[in-house]
Length: 226
Image 1 (cartoon, rainbow, N blue to C red):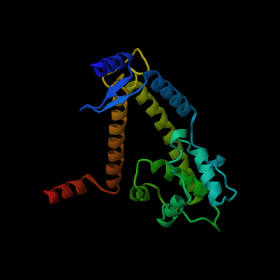
Image 2: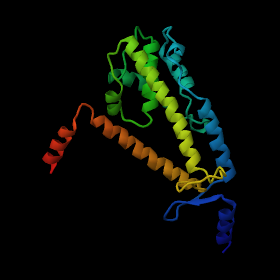
Image 3: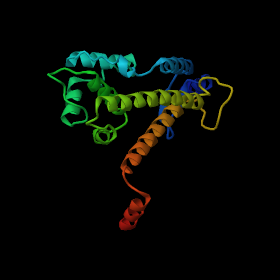
Image 4: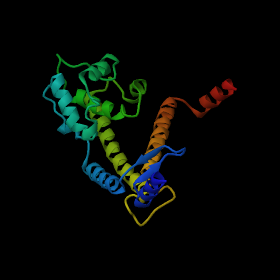
């Protein structure tokens, strides 16, 4: 009885959330709203470095790791133990020929540009997919154009993402204008984010599989699979 009363109070205060099926989680709506606004402000001011801003003086591995963590400061402080940029990972990218080898153990602008793209995309793509996504053997000018286009698309995607979060979390953020997808429930926001992330990854991988193919190729493949 006491437990039921406590749950009812949490529901009325906006601090109670549950997954379908009864898994109960407790969130403070004001805290979540403040965190969302803080992250939005961060993303609005965040951008990848321009090509000319990337160091080209020849850096050793430990310097590269430090620099990449500055360029790609996505993780909140409480998740810093989960190191996503490590010497072992960089060596693995070189070994799998996703990026060029260092020159006498030093990494230059071209290496760091590759690493920025790889580390950004690795959050949602497998190594095998990255090998298809990021071209090797580019001239410096071709790489500059590729990286510049990637950075611009990254910025546009961040702004689009901000708008999507505003819409889904409209109820949490107390926005007057809300749509069917809007919610006041933090667990609903988590679920929506996870589902959309899965769909986005699936779309990217499916589109990559269509590289070099025609509609007729697909029709022939579909007939062969029947």
